[in-house]
Image 1 (cartoon, rainbow, N blue to C red):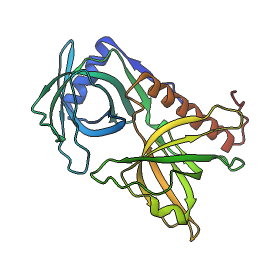
Image 2: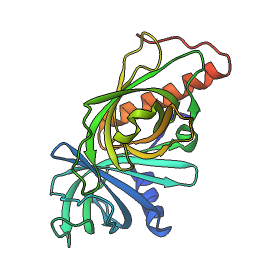
Image 3: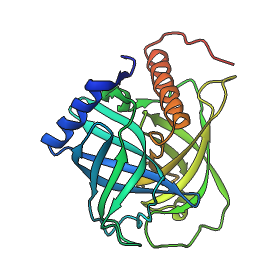
Length: 256
């Protein structure tokens, strides 16, 4: 799998101009009061120092409540590549409080990382491993505020990509989950490796795993919003590669 390409200078500006010309949609994330907010955006303009975007209205997503100097992360899927970068809000126009719409001016990022789409393809957890996933409730992306009664749950990793994972849990725990729920999660990819700590959004639940199990699909959020998040993304890409080798019968050295 190719290492992420890094765009800077004129290449970076050209990539953003291409987003504008092709009306390529992006996803913006930012953290406010301990909660992630997610909005769809389109790119309007780029200058030597700034990028103008417009947030697309979506009633199913939380209000933006975005502020000047707010750090944000951006993810843009284009053909076979996902472009990710972080920036800072330097201007706002027509962004009413409590709504998910309006124009935002971002500082021109110093780099854009380009990750090949293959990294976001699912790879099964190696059959000789039983990778446990510990996860806990973090809230919802819609207006609901009810929290499940249990504080945390444990499941088994079924498959993984750089963008998310699928987890098997016992059927009696299924009632605690629904799409749009936010969860924190932790898993140890291989024995003796350090655990990986992530935040994710529940995307779907499948009850077709038999009467005793429910499969939960989650999407990781916030990885593009900070250097720490992008380091976790690079680690996830490495784990996907390790799992691919193990599934093909190869040996992978565990990192302490």
